[in-house]
Length: 342
Image 1 (spheres, rainbow, N blue to C red):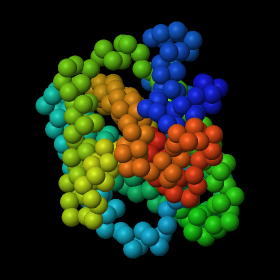
Image 2 (image 1 turned 90 degrees about the horizontal axis):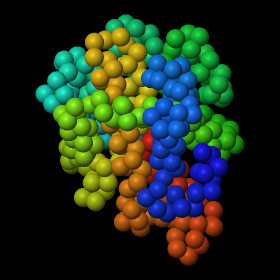
Image 3 (image 1 turned 135 degrees about the horizontal axis):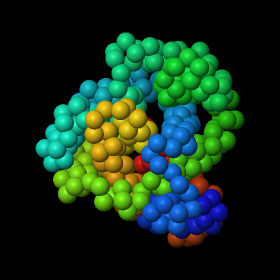
Image 4 (image 1 turned 120 degrees about the vertical axis):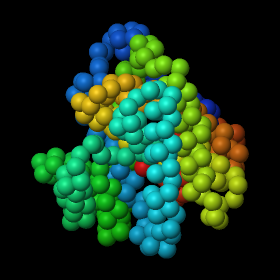
């Protein structure tokens, strides 16, 4: 799959085809539902390990793009996203799941958290606090630690590794910009490889049997989540901001959605609650549809904005032979944030 991705990189950079889509389909092709070359179930440890490591690596590198100065000056939009957009998506999806799919309210609200997304499992407030606090502490106190050391410490102490990864990346960028610049190329490459490995494994679960499980109401809920609930909740949050109409529509289409939903779906499956498998199946189908829909429309949207030079999309003149643009590329690249963004 890596060989195919490398050989087709020029094509995927300027067409609706994406590397994420290739790995997802590749995983499906080698699964039990098609060629039967690998045998992975939702309970397989390799699935939780690869998705967890991928999310950790993505958050660590994403955290390095955080500017505390800009965050202090522009805190209102993130605050509105957390206080308005996330609860709206949470409630709307729970209502759709309960009335269309027929799941109980507890399970429906768990599914409703998927498009938000949320990175934590079902727990008491005390347990959540115990996980979050050391996760943040490790991220702040060990900004120069490698991701492997940080991940190990979090697992040994049961701290939240994802908060630790993101805060460590942010502090690393703020306190040691030289170290951040030296680590960034390797970190970005490792994070992308981890993401593609997780997509390959996740794709192996996408068998015909899985897609046959949801009812018609489930598929209606999936479509509504992708084309209505997440976009509308974000558009409501953007009311009163200085973005123009086209920017609002683009933001509503692409974000915020992230790889966290895969990890969250596995947490729901492993929770042992009633209807956990039905909830996971619904989440998995929604994630698969979202990957296909959003990773195949990012390039046309970027061309509509005429930002090929910003996102590293080759134009017709250099035919993909020129190196990708730098600077804004890591910030505005839609393919990175459709699947890997937070």
